[in-house]
Structures are given as C-alpha cells and as structure tokens.
Length: 148
View 1 (cartoon, helix red, strand yellow):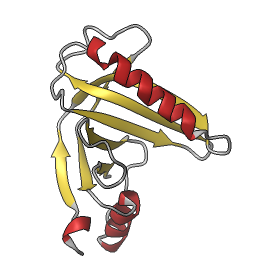
View 2 (cartoon, rainbow, N blue to C red):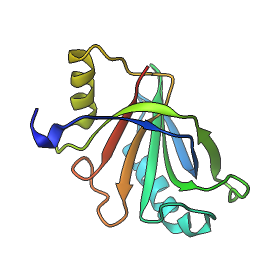
View 3 (cartoon, rainbow, N blue to C red):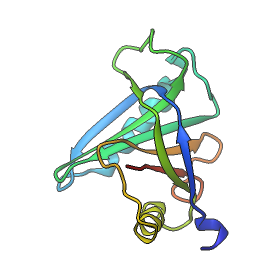
C-alpha cells in the first residue's frame, strides 16, 4: 500500500456537531442540492456557537438502499445553542478506519477492511473532514469509516 492510501485505525471519542443536512433518493439524487446546502452552510457557519475547530468542518453521511443523507457541520463543545434551521446531535465514540487519497477513499478503506477481515459498521455515520482552506474532494478530504 502506498503512502497516499495508508489506513489508520483510530478511536474517536464522542463528538457533538451542529450544521445542515440534505436527504435525497439515490435514483433522484441531485448533486446541486448538496452544493446549495454547502453554500448556505458557508454563509451561516458564523452563527454556530462554541466551535472547537474553526479551521475545519465535518461531513457525516449515511445511506440505505433508497436514501442518502449528507450533512455539513462544525464540531462544538456543547449543544446548548443550535441555530434556527440547523440540527445538533452527538456521535457516540467509535473505532474508525481513516485515509486520505486522490482516488476513491471509500474504496481504499473497503479494500483494506476486506483484506484484513474487518467490517464497516453500517449503522454508524461515515465522516469526511475538510479544511476550509483546502476543501477539495477527494484529494484533501480525510475519510473515516466506522468499524464494527
């Protein structure tokens, strides 16, 4: 495995997030809806109080066989103040496989899991971490897939 596709296994403690979300069907998925939500998030991110890492945002996602939900959030110290129209929630502690890749990071991680007898926890949220100064998919995104 080359350095670009290196997998790191790590434990992440509970994290609290506040942000925006969009849900769509796989068949009717419109990428422009995600882009519009991202633009609204950029305009409104200053409304989110108690931000821990102002230099980055986290995009959790989950899917079923028919629906896909994508969020753009800031990590916060607590959920005491959630701006109108945003969602605040807590992700419990999880073990993750993490990579950064110019190819498909999800495929890189799934190949690693399959090779090493590990399984994705498909009931938990996958995470993408982006830095505001380089929000480039996939080259600059850190992708974390939860493990069983």
